[in-house]
Amino acid sequence: MMNRALNQGVQAGRNEPVMSDQELNNLFDKPAAQNRNAGPQTAERAMTYDDVMMKTGVLFTILLAGAVLGWFVTPLAFPAMLIALVLGLVNAFKKEPNKGLIIGYAAFEGVFLGGISSMFETMFPGIVIQAVLATLCVFGVMLALFKFKGVRYGSKMKKFMLIAVGGYAIFSLINFGIAMMTGSGGARSVEINIMGITMPLGVIIGIVATVLAAMTLIMDFQMIEQGVKQRIPEKYSWMCAFSLMVTLVWLYIEILRLISYFRN
Image 1 (cartoon, rainbow, N blue to C red):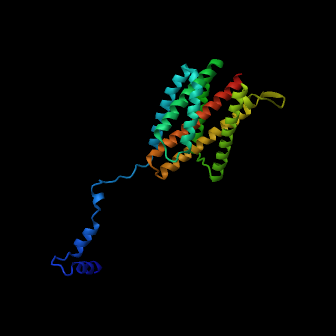
Image 2 (tube, one colour):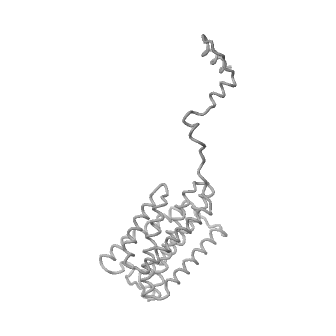
Image 3 (cartoon, helix red, strand yellow):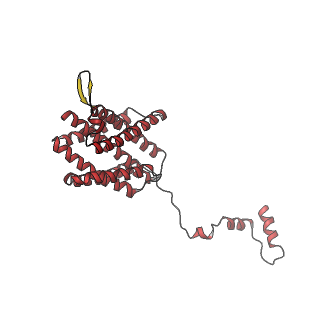
């Protein structure tokens, strides 16, 4: 009734035909001129487990390619580490994942990883394959705990893990600076005596760091699971793959260093 009254009032005093209610409604239902030519808009596809697996595979392929270069050209390890550190921090604090930066991190981290692995292999033949196998075993155990035992972190445990990992990261940066200035191994090279057994402090630190890295894998698995369940956009699969790669690289380096203490 309101449409008819409005239509009749507008047309009053004109010699034009009056539009019916249906015609008036159809007029209002038509899209705006700028939208009619814009074409259909499609929603972004939701992330799946396959997306994360595929992106993780791509990143590790790039990582291994960089590792081959670093293995044979070990002087590239140090500058590659600095570049990877910067890219890693940028990616960690970006709200939106950047595919190019993540791929760049994988490439430079691979060069660093290959260089440091080559150095350890020279000092302790066979140590790299031991560290790789140990890393895969830890990854498999944590994945099984997550999938079959239902291990999940609550909000309090997540906060504890974030504080612990952040504290260890700060310690590692400070210790790296001390080691560079003094030419030693920093705090890790300090000898301690436990129950009559003398060992480097690095053994204790390495064990703690390895446990932290293994526990961080659960956080990565949980993040991926929640992302798939909440149907977040597919582009965030790059961020999930990046987080998983960072944790596995960290785990490998800690295991590599820990084995070297016992081999030494």
